[in-house]
Length: 579
Image (cartoon, rainbow, N blue to C red):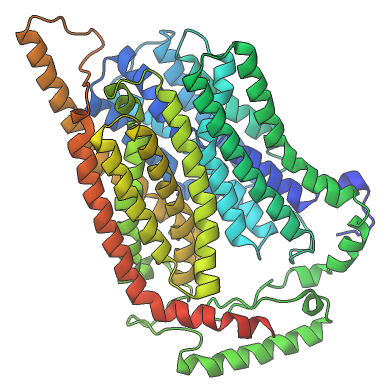
């Protein structure tokens, strides 16, 4: 990189600008979390029962989880084209559904509606993959904060889009589907040339700590602001002008991270920071970390500025010491299958490891049950007498966001400061979710607020903890394959819980209540079977609570199996980092 770039070019090539652009993309990417708000509209117009709505939810979850095509395209195509493809898929899928709901085109059978939801929601995998690929390449030494923050904003996008929708809301409830189809695609197309790897020094810079601290503070402020705003709008009948003011303030908060690349580029210390972090092209092509069995060696700024010959000599010395330490267990733990925990497994090699299936099944039970609650929030809130289901969709989106940010941060403290296995944090989050399912099942006044809070936190924590644990246990080289396979736990869990358990119990209770009303001569509602009362989701919530407890047990088994590995890996980290 030319150190004498003009300020506009330096700003455009600033890796923090890429990160901020990725945050904005993620802020509108998670439209799948809005299904609980749009499913009642689809159910009424199409005359579906709860099992048919559950089938649509499974198709939506499957579309949001199958990211293998997006990952492959990122390897062969420019990232802007991958983003553009994702935007087209979102417009095509959700846009066609909007045309059907508004009567502009003919009604399609259920299987075709499932395909449309799959295509529309699959667009977000293109957004997520592109954002993660570009930012992880730009920040290779800050993978934890990068993944946690980006995935967190994806979880928050549901609440953000709902708040924007309150400004443009019309008597036509299908307008939300139109906004989901068009709004995120416009934002992504506007930013698609910014989201890319940039040729800049990748080492940790002096300004990184303060920049990440600002982003974390903004995350907490956004969550608090959105929660207060949503509750106020739910409890108080605010005028439209107040709603516009709240939304403008939200947009200002979302735009505020742009100050980071502006200050770095145009600040008084920008020139000296650039000189300190500048590396030649040959040096930038070297790995930023020494990878021996996936052990990370943290390098100081002084080491980064050493001549190439001295750096190579230092790397050779570290390699020799690591190999000497390996036989006594200071670096790695031997696996029965020939590879060691922490080495670069392929996906096929991981399939024969008990650790992998313990992680996947616990994720399926925990995350799958949480996603089932998100997909059925519209019907849950209606059964308990709430007439504004979008409020709970927004609230669980906020807690999902906080769960990802806080879960990733706390799990990092667990492993780096105490050398405890990261799956221990996963077990805690699953125990929290078991409590949340119990609260929702009880159907007491206010229990849905508590349940969405607890389940949102637990569900979000899953997706900050599990990918990080997979990268530690099975290596970083094939992390994309592991991540995309782990995301399949979402639709698999949704199929088990939503399609087979929740929808069948709901329709049974709705049919029973309808039969009782017929016996008393009451007229049935034209919108189809609708269940009212806490009994509608009582049994299914208790079943999901029980499966969450099973997930806790599986995670604790994984903790027991990997405790020596984590102890050796992170207790030695401080001694290795001083080299």
